[in-house]
Image (cartoon, rainbow, N blue to C red; front, side):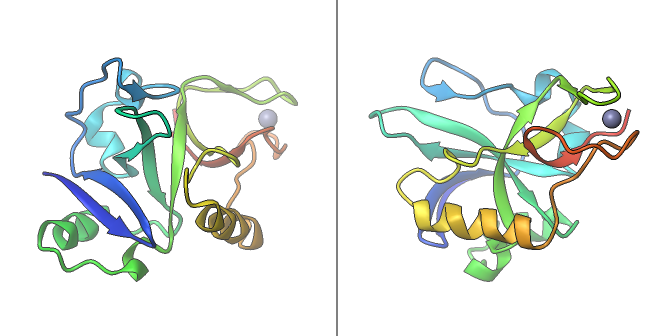
Length: 161
Ligand SMILES: [Zn+2]
C-alpha cells in the first residue's frame, strides 16, 4: 500500500512496505534497504515521501515511533482511513545512517536512525519544533551502547549488530 495522507497538518506519502525505487526526483541521505533487510526495517520504521521545495522533488525519510509500537497497527489504520493525528504524534521523521561511529570509543554501527534538526518538516517548522522538543524532553536521543558517549547527531535508533 502507498497512500498520500495528511496528519498533524503535514502531507506525505505513506508506504507500508520498502518497495520504493530511488530515482532522480527522490532526495535521500542513505537508502536504508541497501544496508538492512526490509523485513528488519519493517519492525522499526516506515518510508515516507514528502514534497520538497523544488517542484517534482520528494524527500525520502523513515518515520520512527518513539514508543516501540507495533507499526502494523498504523498500517491498518492508514489502509482503512481510520487514523488520527494521535496515531502520529509519537512519530518523527528520521534519516538513515549506514556508518555511525562513536567518537569516544570508536565503535561503528552499521545502521542508525537520526533526526535532522532543520529539514525534517519542510513547510511546517512549527511541527518540526514540537517533534524536536518531544525527543529532547523525553530523553529519546540515544547514546553509544558501548561507552555511553553522546553522538554528534540526534540518534533515535541503532540496529544491533
Ligand atoms: Zn562509544
